[in-house]
Image (cartoon, rainbow, N blue to C red; front, side, top):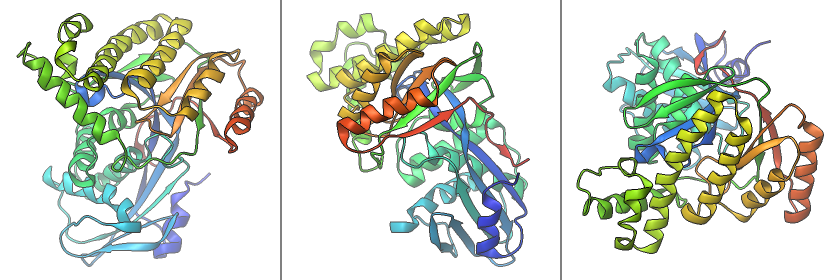
Length: 384
């Protein structure tokens, strides 16, 4: 079976691409908003991906198309930010700029097409998947050798500096380092990446509320700023603290009265979430999925009450899933403020059960939830 991007490329440009690459979306299993705070996080690459196909051009033009946006983006001259309907092009263009800083050289332009079976705006990090697939395609097309860690860091730089989203390394790291039947553990301070084997029988179910979030315009940036404000307040007492990951909950208790209430809640969520990640890693490694599931529910409660990045729709889904047989645990996944809930379930929880959860959601909110069943998958690679 062919990949979905070749037909998009052929319709747009005629003929076949020189090569294509794919990168998976990700589920944030636990570690909500810990990554840019220097903490730890556990994620899973999933079997839904973004594909990028590319072919060099003799002239200097860079032409980009996607299956969902029929009008091509054409860039001549220096790489420049795109606006309006062309803003999606900032992800591959930002990656290209980051790779050129790392030594990528090209004599001319290129034609690039994008296709995906990964829902957009559902908290599954389609943006990082587009970045990683673009990075692998560019490196192969223009002969640049980088490690997976270097690729992930280049893609994060592109999103931070070119796209303008202050994300951490979670999304890019999981998309780069994912393996089938394994979780990806990231210590974001390094960052360092490792895999956590899991016992068999884990299924992830994604319930998208269809609330589309745009991170740049959302409260994501506000939460980032609040975390930085918490660091400033804590450092007045503990000068060694440079990130929220530098303090544990016991020391945080001693400085809570120095922070505005909202800032203190954000800090408590992050610090306690980092501690939960450590306990969850141990639970997965030992095969204690009931304990891992309990920690997922605890994580969602913290996101709801302390970090305040949940919504009524997300909370309802977690509540229903928590009382459903076969579900170990559930929580919002991704930046929050809409998007999706992730449920970790055993093999007894199937499509009929998921449909029942979706029906209850529809009855409550008058709109269906998009339901996606995913398994852990390999990370970014050239197309096979």
